[in-house]
Length: 216
Image 1 (cartoon, rainbow, N blue to C red):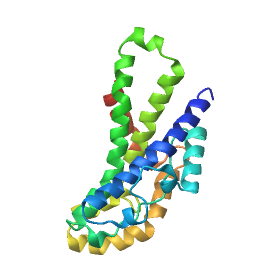
Image 2 (cartoon, rainbow, N blue to C red):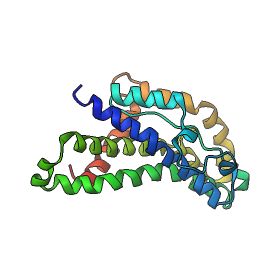
Image 3 (cartoon, one colour):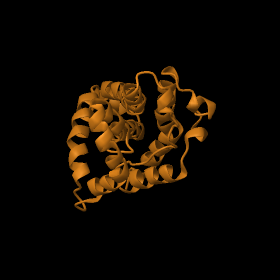
Image 4 (cartoon, helix red, strand yellow):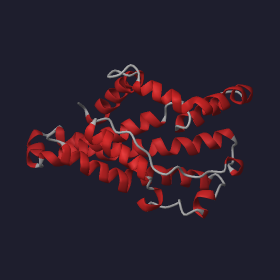
């Protein structure tokens, strides 16, 4: 693979910047809504060491460098939902803050990348590796945003889903989904082999967002 080095660099950037920003956004949203748990535990910070999860980081490296997909996680941000203002809507806001931060990171790099690619003379003057790193950074942040917003526990999107359900529906379905959510994720992304259901869901959304932001 000719793009191994750029992928390694992007993984390093995600571990040092992307994941910390994602978890910090959860912590900041929770703090602003009344829960200081993350701050008390030293997680209201952009320090990558505070958010690093060895298994999640290793999986990100293996999946993005070896399989070109990009799946991994940082250490989950602790949140006491009982302290949050707004009840289940507060929980949904805290959950959505992480994926939204990935979208913001993607946009911050996609805008200059789009400008560069729209000018052939400018694009030629910039090393191709830099352009590839920018492209891959936009790509992986969009993948993580879409993936995390899937309405399946323990993903962030499940908290958003529960906010939209009635209290009775949430009471009925939340324990079931939380018990079998991880199994459902495995089914979504490993079956059928080579062309999973999850890839079919994420693929078109990813292509549309990437085209919208980068212009190609």
